[in-house]
Length: 327
Image (cartoon, rainbow, N blue to C red; front, side, top):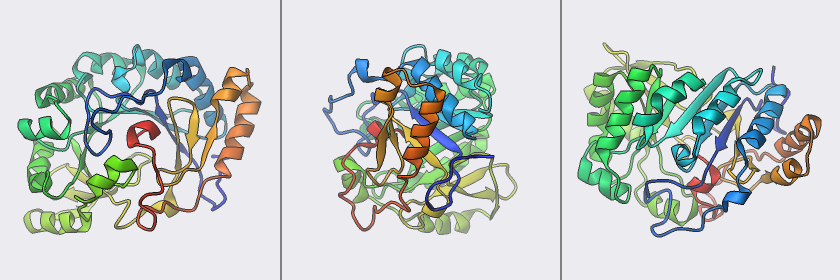
């Protein structure tokens, strides 16, 4: 049973761990073109420091952890961290979010290290469009990474597609068919106005209720469920094993069930994507804080968690980019 309960009675059971704010792609809604103001390596939490923090969370009842970025696979020796986290008493579910550009050569080792589930960002199946959205990326590398993940035994592999007006909203059905063919799970995501990049992408916002209505004209959608700690509302496509999740932070926010916090690469604990409430753990770690001191700090941090984001009411409130916070 989780001992972590925020001021609004929500149990915190899930930590997302950003191991880097760097990425080998430049998706326009995540990181500004030409941006180079990354966190200095000396400020990154080491693998041992991350393990100490997640160990403290586990002692407080957290059972799920996800490794994110930026792009986590640009951090050297990532399978070593995965093995350390998977070995922590209490951590029952270790997953990874990635753009899959480098996944082909890391998939088998990550699976052996204890990562069982993957979320892969993929907004288009068109190579030229992918190149444009990602600032020069190659779709063939992502597809090779996805096939390597299947071969390595990851299950489920979830495809995350940010649906954007005039960018890729014409590919919704094609992505459904792709995921049916390859036995992937599909999750559609609404754009969020985080930083200047997010606010620009918000001009391309698509209400996922409209997407669901479109899909219902072509497929029979039945209620579905998926294991995991995330906020998606799932449906199953009749006659297939495909689950489609709808993540709707704007049109139907899910703040009342939020069960997570985010640890950034510099050791800042963020309580909410859409607020600036944060707690710095790095000074404590570098000062040699023991497990009890870390647990006390985490409890103090959770007490700062706000009731909800304010993306709609105050779209300019959050200035940090998604890549800085962690996906």
